[in-house]
Length: 93
Length: 470
Image (cartoon, rainbow over all chains, first blue to last red; front, side, top):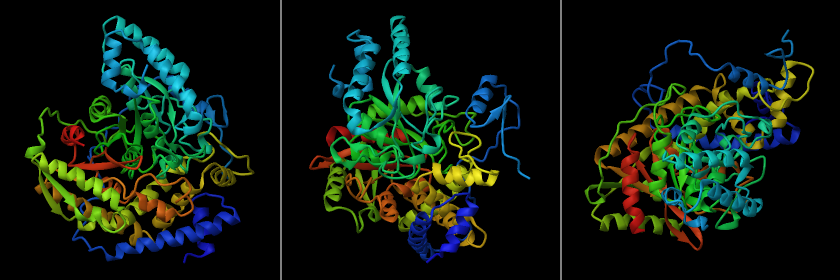
């Protein structure tokens, strides 16, 4: 069983504020789910896992492709707090 | 106008022969939505203005003889796919008022072929779930039984087609989110090969698994839509251009594999009977049936529920109260993150972010994430081996038909188990189709056809022949 302190620690890492009730439910659910993952211990060990990437491995060239400027305006418009074409963020330090 | 009769092909014929205009057809669908969707809840928003504008344009094009693949045909779009200028909520409070700044590539392609967009359909929040009960805006009901779920996560897209609120629709499939609701609602749903369709403009869930695909009334329609949306896109590096194949596959020449793990403990006997019946029909048509084993199947669900939440925990970091939608006022930046995410995200989304964060955290990474990736390789090898001897695999989509609303809502593990037959192929990046194979009472049951990479044409060719026999 995962401890309540662990749940709180993980929630902090994940930047999630949980209520006391949510923390309790999470403790129960996570414990059950993590227990289920123990099933994987039964799985045979593969000789070598070749790669972790699915699909093609071609990366695109680092080129600048022209896009319509209105797209940038719309992206900024979606931000909750903005000024003069910039997204406002609270001071970090 | 009898909307129940309309397939894409039939709608186009009617438009071509001037039996009705696209505006008339669109209005008929909008009326139907107004009439029944208050109860059904398949739509989160109806884009009436956009639909009517597109329908008018389609009528002009038809009049000038420009007869595109989907010209004037009304469709519905899962609310996790961006349609420029329209709300896109992913059924989450955190994006409740978010307006899509651009079109997803699939939407661009639908528009190029003249399709009419009726609205955005309900889904589990951020496409995480198997019933749409995780939607922040209420569950979609099953059109065949209003006490039951439509399946999920693309439940709204499946229900809209089943209830004749749209001629076809688009959904997305990460662990079964197209095939399972297609099975529950009795429509055709295709999850294409990983890379077959661009995901640009699909709100990301788990990037090594997400794929967009169609819902339709029959296999032919699903193929028409798939052919429109597929192909390489410079905006999605994982997308590839599939080879062109016009080869006709005859059931009589095929070897169909039946993996025994998909008929193990837990499957409802009535579901098994229907699926075995479909296999028998294929056999009678001359197919060779090969009973086989995919031994790593039993690990697929655990493997998926490590990989999927791990990717979620990274992908959903962008919902921080700074870039989009909801932002909770707070003293400092860290508090903005905590409060916005705490209030804006629903229970299941939080749960998956927590599982993912746990599995990726220092000290647990090897035991969970790395182990899951190794098991994923075993699952891929299982399928690769199978496709050396058979053309396609036949199996159920779900161990049971649509379950009751609320039945699994409080127990995440039992909800996860609903995906047991749809998940393994996703871990291998394979395509799968759900097609109606029979009914238990009035509840539809889907047959799943799994093919090798980029063999959607083979799957659909077989499904089309089978459609006539079932």
